[in-house]
Image (cartoon, helix red, strand yellow):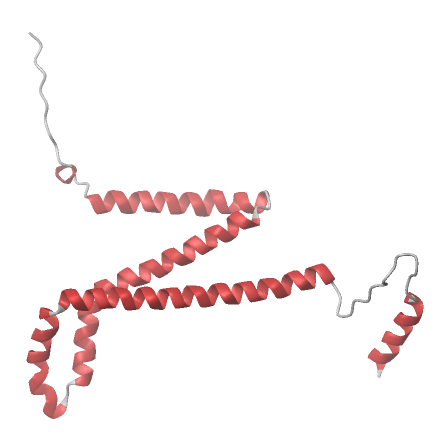
Length: 173
């Protein structure tokens, strides 16, 4: 008879943790994006894809800052507590530390909300600044001059020679 044997092996026993797999897949994705997709956007002049990648990288950085703030929250609490409670108020240090550790979950939620809001404000400010500069650059690229004068009708052109002489005399003043 043919026997089938099934053996369950956890990835952890092989030396692979879930966070290692997730982080390695994330690094492969980032590497592919940086070394293949970004040059692709330049070669084929696909500017919308390039800007999408930049926005995604910025959002990823803001998400990373939020996660980092959540991880560092207990340490930052202790540092701020040491700065706030000194001198005669130093006796309250252990009481406030116990209170902070008792409310750690609520404090963590508040920290995540605060850092997410702050990250959104930073992202929105960066995007508004980028859009404002983009509008200015597009106007400069399309107009390509400081002064632009258009004739109302094609059959009735403007006196280009006279206008050029006038502008040159004005610039030389």
